[in-house]
Length: 246
Ligand SMILES: Nc1nc2c(ncn2[C@@H]2O[C@H](COP(=O)(O)OP(=O)(O)O)[C@@H](O)[C@H]2O)c(=O)[nH]1
Ligand SMILES: [Mg+2]
Image 1 (cartoon, rainbow, N blue to C red):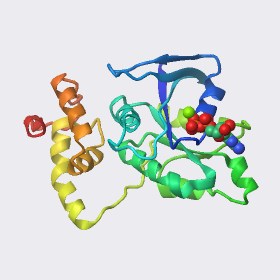
Image 2 (cartoon, helix red, strand yellow):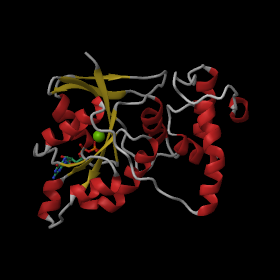
Image 3 (cartoon, rainbow, N blue to C red):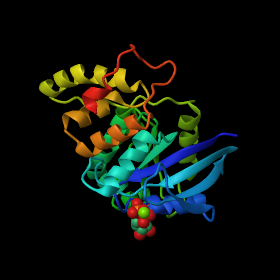
């Protein structure tokens, strides 16, 4: 049976590890991945007959190349292609947390937004309209309290639906100012022709325009290693722009 990979991302202190521990309990181990030297906590759980492997990624405020943690989290979400990425947000500071959620939505559409500490929000008189948020973001949104074990089965149903493809989220697209959109319109097709449809070409093009040297280095390595062969069915016009990037 397929084991679905679920990555946990979010700002520090949003309750990722609490959720991770609740779901995976004693079925935990550390493992490294794709030749990286970092150890990530992994754990297994089942839900409704599906098997999941969860990875507790380092907490970060953004996903550029500002720190090792940001690079690890970002590379995992983009290049390890988890079946689902859960973005854990703190219900009491949604505005600050939304920044990271929007970045993840730019990287992959296989996302579930999980609003944690809903007990704390309630105590403070904050009401979170998950249905409205879900419509605006274009992905499933669950409200939970990891510490009080509230809302967990609802969250897991959403995770399972995205993992199995029963739900295919269509994340909202952040539109930038005209000049940037014009450059994206030129660069994005080149990225798509080079790397295929496997990765978000819009996100990659944004990072290249941002002169993200950390990401460029990762791309170079992966191209050298032959990892970027477009899959069958991907767009490939028989020309390669690899050397333009490398
Ligand atoms: N009130 C409340 N506190 C929580 C909840 N989930 C986690 N916490 C607390 O938030 C703090 C940070 O949790 P942790 O899991 O370490 O966050 P991480 O940094 O995202 O891994 C801890 O003190 C947790 O006990 C929750 O649902 N409600
Ligand atoms: Mg943690």
